[in-house]
Length: 74
Image (cartoon, rainbow, N blue to C red; front, side, top):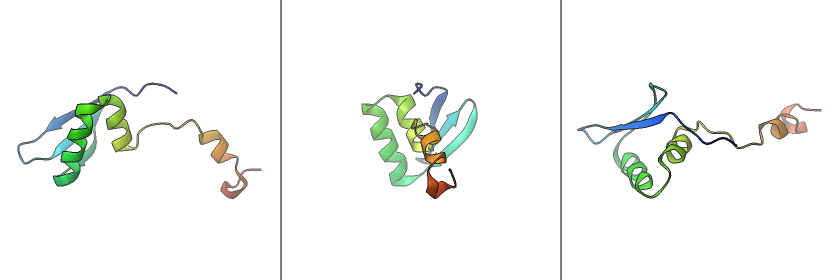
């Protein structure tokens, strides 16, 4: 599994937080969710935290899930 990279974030004056991925907006968080993200960023790997919040990360089980009978695999 690779290390997530290319994420950055911007705190806005209105309290919202924008997460950018390779220069493109990936998520906008407001209110309590924005505050929760900022708290997590203080205590963890910023790249991994932002990848998790945007859903842009791999778990390593995509091939296994694709082949499962429930998902149409054989």
